[in-house]
Each structure stands twice: as C-alpha cells, then as structure tokens.
Length: 432
Image 1 (cartoon, rainbow, N blue to C red):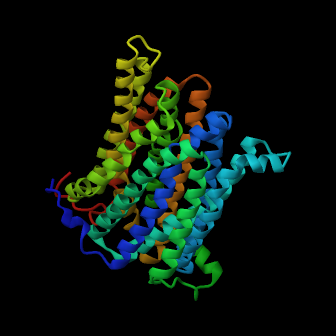
Image 2: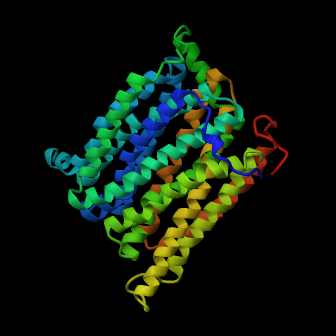
C-alpha cells in the first residue's frame, strides 16, 4: 500500500477544476435536501413511507432512462450541451418539490403521494442526463491512474458541498421547510451558467454518423458481457447506498428522536469523512487491482449495516431503560454507520467508474458510463422501495442482516468478474 500524498490533487487540466467546482455548488443544493426529503414528505406531509419510497423508485427509474439517453447524447452531440441542459432543467424540476401540496390541491384527481411521484419523475429525467456526460468529459481529459485521481477529486468537491448543504439545510428546514427545495433548484441554475460560460467544448460528438448507425453502436457498447456484469454489481451497491436517504434518517428521527437540525449535524459525518479520506484512501490502494478495492469496499458496507442493526437489536432510544445514556450509544452507532459506509463509498465510486471507463473505446465511453449510472439509479430505487416496505410492514430489524448478506453475494460476483478482466483494465496487480 502506498503512502498517501496530497500531490494526488495536483496537475489536472484547469477545466477539471471548473467542473469540480460546479459540482460542489450543485451538490451543496442536494445536501440541503438529502436528509430531510423523506422526513418532510413522510412525517410532515403525511405520505406513507412505502409511498415515499415508491416516489424515489419512480425518480430513479426516470433517472435511469434519462441517464441512458444522456450517455447516448454525450457520445452523439458532445458532453457540454448535455451537461448544461441537465442543470438548467434541474433548476425547474427540483424546485417543484416545494409545490407538491399545491399541485395536489390544483389537480383533484392527484393525491399528495401522486403529486410527489409526478414531481419525482420530472426531477429524475432532468437530473439523469448529467452524470454520464460529466464523467465522460473528465475521462476525455485524463488517462490511467490520473483518471482515478480525477474522479476522487470530483468526489471530494461533491462532498464538501454536500456537507455544507447538510448544515445549511438543517437551519433552512427549521426556518421554512420548503426553502431547502427552492434553494436546491437555484444551485442547479448557477451551475448551468458556470458550465455554459467557462467550460470549453472538447468533444464534438459523432453528428456525422447516421442516427440508425449511432443507435446500433450504442446498443453494442452497453450489451458487452463484462459491462453488463459490472452494471449488475453496481445495482447491489446502490441498494445499500439508498438506505442513507430512506431508512437511516427514519431510524435517527423515529427511533432515536433526533430533530431536523440534529439529523443534519449528524449527517455531516458523511461528507466530512469523504473530504478527509477520499484522496488518501484511493491513492493508498492505487496499486491494487480495482476488483480487490471494490471487495474491500464491501467489507466496510457490511460493517456499516451491522452498526445500524445493533440499534434495533439493543433497543436503543430515549424510551429504553437507561434513557439518555442508551440514546447516546444509539446515536454513536448511527454515526459509526455513516463513517464506515462512507469509507465503502470512497472506495466504490471512483474505482467502479474508472473500471467501466476502461472496458470500451473513447466513442463508447459515454454510453457505458451511462449504463453504470442507470444501474446505480435502479439500485437506489429498489433500495428505497424495499427499505420502505421493511419498515412499513414491521420487519425493519431484518433489513440490515439482509443487506449484510447482499454484500457477501456482491463479493462473490466481483471475484468472478475479476477473472474476465485484463491487467490493464483492472489496474496494477503488484499488490492486492
């Protein structure tokens, strides 16, 4: 294992830093909303948690479809136009969450849950276009180990914004609840202006290729066996990711009795851990095979799920015998979950993206990265819906061991995929 160095953040093209700064602003907006969306629509608006989960599933399905389209368009017309259009669209759709009750009141046939689902679908469509185009843009500017470092740099900027959003979001939510949704939309508009004004168009696309031929090329790019295998594994990772938005906030608020501001403060552990450890951890395992880095990630994910499971097994909370002291232990276990799962995220996100970007040619990159994001969105949706079902039907304590078992299955899948990868695709093989 190499000794970590902050030299890993230096030496990129100026445009990489501009894209990273834009994403910091955008993800700041997402951080304003992230821990409060489920709490707001379930506990304040009164939508059943399973229906909130269904709305998030619908959003992720829409995002997945839009992501596939975004990957195709990124290869077809170029990365920059897709990125700008996505952020401009987010400015409208994300603000729409503030008006869910008004939408339901204006359309008698539409329930509160129905209005939430409708807004979620449109938000998913606008948001889904961005990721494959931005990831392909960064891949166009980097190669080899520099690509792993660049994706890690983006992750650091993303989560600096995320953490800032958690803090500000807690304050905004206690002041005016819907302000977090409006601010989320405004940050996307700011990013659209930044990208349009400051980011050069370095990939013109393949507009000279006939539409029918380009669709055929897209289909071949995303149906390669190893590409599909990595995408399927990413679904499982995303099921675990989803719990941070869907079920963990419910454990923190309903079981442990935390307020919105306390929840936002606790959730700072996620971006804080990412900012502090993203570059050093990825740099430290840069000589490992990428598949082994992902296996290590799953070990952290399994441990994180075990930490939340202990909150249920030990009956921790303010109503438990021992009161305040056991509440402190419960909060500590949720905090431990956030830190440990974040280390799993630190390893998973840049390594899986770099691995996918090396499984095809430059002209296939946007499409294949879009499939990885489609898989992630599908997993988010499945994880949100399944987590809501476990909680609504009285099986909340069984969710966590089920996720631990899922992590074990994913380890086996990664070891099987490893046999199909070349050394250059899978990174250096001297260690790990």
